[in-house]
Amino acid sequence: MKIAIIGATGTIGQRLVQEGLRRKYEITAATRDSSKIDKNTERLQGISVNVLDPISVEAVVAGHDVVINAFGPQFGNEGELIEAASAVVEGMKRAGVQRLLVVGGAGSLEVEPGVRLMDTPDFPAEIRPLAQAHVDAYEIYSKSDLDWTYVSPASWIEPGKRTGNFRIGTNRLVTDDDGASRISIEDYAAALFDEVEDPLFTRTRFTVAY
Image 1: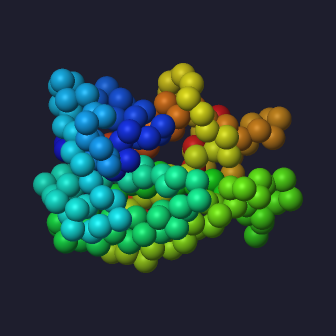
Image 2 (image 1 turned 45 degrees about the vertical axis):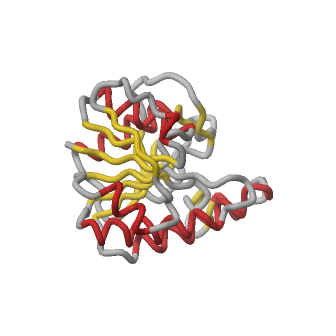
Image 3 (image 1 turned 180 degrees about the vertical axis):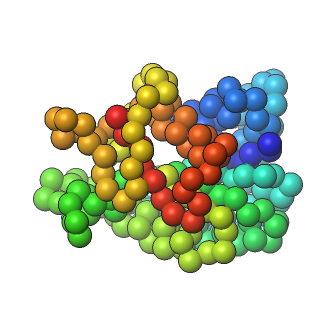
């Protein structure tokens, strides 16, 4: 299976590349600057992409079985997340590639019926624009004709260990017995690739946490 990962040098993108290689897939690591990709790694190809340009996306994803969009904008440029969603959808349609998995946000997950995490009093104001951009991007994916899956992390995601032990939810934030919602990026990547191998959430979303 050939998998293109857009945003491959980001914090999450790097772990996705590692997980894909661990599972013996052919990985195309697409990023703004392909010189950051270790081209000596077996089954790994580095390539430059402008994720805001559907023609650039088309050139990168053509011939692949699956696309993973792990693009994350710089602080203050949250609107690029929405532009990227449109460009990825259009680029994939032009290339004739159907299967898309998206590294999404947690802010739109519900903490109780009708109440999103991003609408709770303790949600940090400084990341609310990013959360809203994720919501708007989700709408673009959900209205597309692609076989998309949107993968929301726990409310707290950071580098850590790959344990392979986690819980899966749908639209509700997954928390532990203490009310915490967290996941390592390594286990998030494992859950996403589990979905690549055994699709259970096509044209919908899921979330992963401990």
